[in-house]
Image 1 (tube, helix red, strand yellow):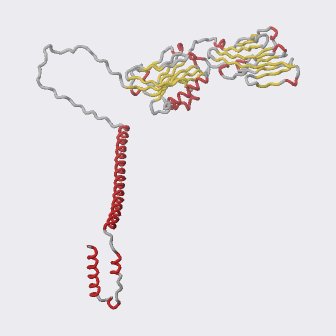
Image 2 (tube, one colour):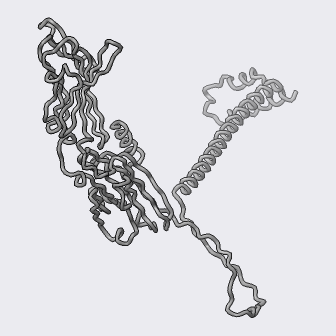
Length: 426
């Protein structure tokens, strides 16, 4: 049961993070056993369930009969038989079931006052060997606890010992000696306390959005004695209500009528039973949505005058309603993505054009160089020049006396050109 409560609290903290900031103070307020999100339309009625059979108050004045302790003995032979050793309840004498054990086996008379339910065995005999179980029952608070202890008997004082075998405590005692098998529970539950109607309390709290848990508003306090305390005008206006017989049925559900947006927030039901050690919380996050659309009415129209009104041939101009929808952040991001994709595509196209243009220019230059080389080869093959005579003409030794005579050089150039032209056309 305790493990289930812990798991529920963990789930409430994970899946309802906003409001469940109260989990930090769960040790003070109680264990969260239920957490829900509830969404209802405005104007409707909300029922926040909060049930607990452990909070039912039956006004039983004989509560002492609800607390019982008994010791049982399980022997391995024959056939693992179970034997009741003794039992006891408050304001009642302990009852020993075997006449041989009377005066020899007992538990303290103050067990239900100090919580010590240990079993005392005097003059241990061999038939005392077996597994003893201490059973504590509180029927009103629905608590059942058991403690197992194994007792072995030996004739050697050196073998006396006490150890743990992983499941239970084992006592090895000397034959004829005395032993105390411990069973102690000092919780206030097992002692005399205040009246139950002063110990059972239920209350509802309301935490508006943005308000800290310790600043939550108290709505109502309910006591098992029938006392009731309402806080604020909501209960006085009958907008909120809790059943009058809540402690009789264990139903502490909260009803909220005519829901409005101001009613949204965190509602928590706290159940406290100090006598039984019960501290539970149930949390509800209430969200108020838009109201439900009203159903269309088909009632006939009633005119004040039976005569029909004057007809007009004028045509009513259509009415145009402009609705401006605010742009969402996702809309802006979507268009930004379109713009970036278009820009990237244009950039790729420009880069491709530049690369192709450069390749074409490079190929054109290579083609011109090859064409010029081919032209030189063809010209050299069709019109071979006889350079021997040019050499004789150009490298003819000149007299140093006429080196600076310009007229002599002009005459020699003319003669050389005439000879070259004559040979070329031949």
